Image (cartoon, rainbow, N blue to C red; front, side, top):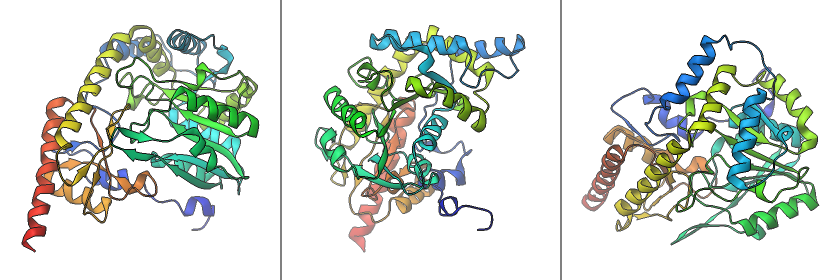
Length: 392
């Protein structure tokens, strides 16, 4: 491919969009494929964006985010985790995914190794590969009570060339939640080894039975090699707004301003004002989503628990189920056939890393009525497949 680096030329479309793009805007499809629900961003957040536009907030701003939003994020995190965060560690470069991208670009050279805790969202691996790094994975273990992985198991997968490590907790797609003890062990190791730990905490409010998941921010020193990525998409139903934040080592503040200017010139200004409203007025809404998603998890577990071809390690957080469907050879074929036959969109498991080609990911953030209908269609599809196998 002329004019394109080999690292870019080798990239392939991830399996989620490979299934979804064919019928992305089809209203007849029940869309379990993307990580979002069907609730519109609430009025008070949208009104804040409208007011900002009416007030002429359409100009360039600081590439690390407007001061009032950085202050609001600091206050939110301080109150949530009982910490005292230096506001100069907070940057709003654009989307949370852009935060991951910049962190990876800052940490890695061509030929370095990067380690990803897996199953993982496919764009993380792509982002690491774009740097020219070699990507290794360490896979969580399925158990009857949920997915498991210890800090020692992660550390055992580190190589002498590892320069960055990615952890997502609560995890997309498995619902795994890393314990405080394991976070401390892993952070201590990264500090001693000078490995940049990128901690994706975008599902921080979606942990079942608790108000908030354990965060590396609660135990980190101001200049640890740690970038904590978070954002507004999940907890406040703002997926289309594309605003996230990062908390970085204090020494990196100026470099985040430089990198943000190169990548995005900063997040959209009127959307940043909406994010302030989300933080300052949105707790009741956050709690309502938490309740809906926890009930959604229970609906999925109940629907699948007795089916002989479905094995589900129950999620402890986020809003996904990652069941294994026995007797299938290709999760991509399964997802495409399900979409054609039942108008239900799921994400094929292969795209979440090695060892997952008999899995599918189901986002249960939809309304409970749509969720139950979609699950019934999935079960119908599997039953028909069983009947066809018996006949043949």
